[in-house]
Length: 228
Image (cartoon, rainbow, N blue to C red; front, side):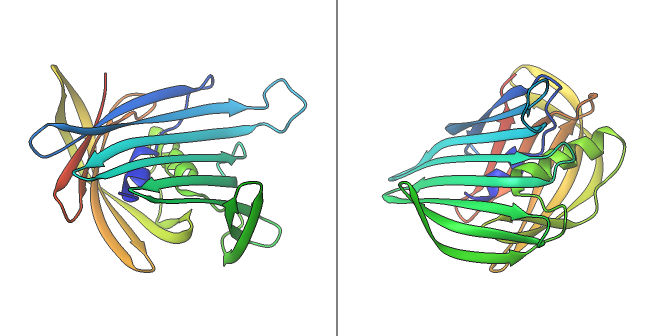
């Protein structure tokens, strides 16, 4: 289910922020949960540095197994990451960690979080403008809105995952009783021990709103749909 993060997060917020809501569905169409993605500009008109804040909340379940995830990231105006906080709950297993980016050292430091303490540090080598998964896919949305297809690059979510988009043409998608034109992309995500190919659908509007995602996992191919 961690791949849902890559799918739900590629969305540029407007100048005043936005919140998008999604339904996560079984192949039969029955809902298995919902997710929300919030994007906000930060620091404008204040003494703090301007930038972005992104937040993803996921609440879903399969028989006998509940998933409750929360992700929050901050980035500069150019979509270069500052920090990613991650809390996950998968059944009875819970974890919390923080990734801090240092562009001066080209590193991202991953730390386990236990209450007010951190520990278990792991350091990754990253590009000068490194992006966590939320920030990278927000950057992707901005690039698509400007008519560009981003090149392959890493998304940091604990480990580094190489993300590549391939344009497959335009199509029509149905959301409830509505139909809309969308662009379809094949998205490959490759990590240290994973290799997954997904389908993303972006509306052909000015801000490239993500409207549908198809996620193949071991149980089935789930569909994530924007709630109009």
